[in-house]
Image (tube, rainbow, N blue to C red; front, side, top):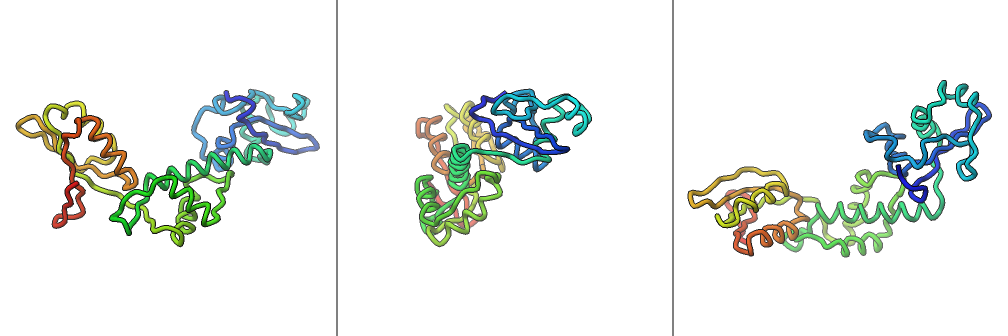
Length: 241
């Protein structure tokens, strides 16, 4: 279960009665969209249905039976969310908006590059400042994934930006290959790999272009800076880093 501080109220009015449940805001939106796949007990603040959650008042059992054909809270809670309205306070809305804004900035930073600077990643601070300059407002009631395209449209007049992937060839010395290749291959999509006769390892991996600095840091940390990397653009254009 979640804490009361994290929960929002979903409210349904039906047959002259009111029903309220306390639920995680993101889970409530997922349930409304029919996309929730988790355990309901993990995303509610109380395994109960209220007439007024703020006072702890509960509806009469005959009202539950009349509206939901059951008195089981775990059956009623999703119905209240799906059929009712999600109530949030101004403070909850601000907190949700701030959380979604951070998630949006992180998503864009992980995937976007600056095409005017040799496809270098944009730091999150630059994206955050550009969103503010563009006057983009994050919708706290919508999933981040559904707001990325609108955010990019707002950013393009402010900074040069595009989503891209990068493909990098990595050569790991034999001394580090055993442990380092396991971490490298998990970073993105491994296109191909080859073990060398001396025990070294070569791999070609594709991942979001915004993660280049993170990738090089990973490689260097696990090989004491002795690995070699190449950004592969095409067969005739290979840039050595």
